[in-house]
Length: 280
Image (cartoon, rainbow, N blue to C red; front, side, top):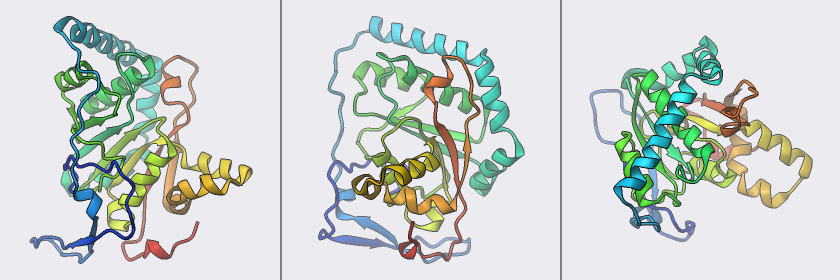
């Protein structure tokens, strides 16, 4: 599935369904003959539309004002300065430069943002993403999706320069180019879906993930010994050994709670490694 494709994965794939092999196009650069496996279900596009379609200029204006106020408060906060300082330390920032590489730009995909109209944590998360885009010229297009987004929220997000996806990808976006997935406080299954869709070294190495700590998931499962949970997070557990993770510095203000427990995840995988043979 192309990185910019707005496709749907509403239904769990059936292993018995047809698979399609897509070979990369020829280019001047060195060709790597990886096979891109596309499930049949990935090609079945199902358009998503908001359930809440009631909107008017007043409602949208009030929401825009809420977001702008949130952005201004966050920008002037000690939390933002601390977050920015940590992000720009060489041990973290060098990973961004490596991922961007010769592309020059890295798109940002925001999954699971929630309702920015009804709740403050989603507004804080969105504000953080917007400030990052304003700060770093190498962050390109910002795409957003959550099935709870209303029509009013969709219009405000568009006015803020974001692109609201028109299909629920269920986190299964293939990173065919450098992509930052901004996913604080999402469900573990969404992270696992993302890893599953990119279960190849060249794709995973294109990903920078900001979201719940993979290390914390591993520690929790080592204690609770729940086989059902372990199976739903098998890709998270397997990939842990190839992930460099940096937790966000703890902070004692209201802004921090919006991303509490989140980490930066960077992938460094040998291009010749067969991940299918790797065990957690």
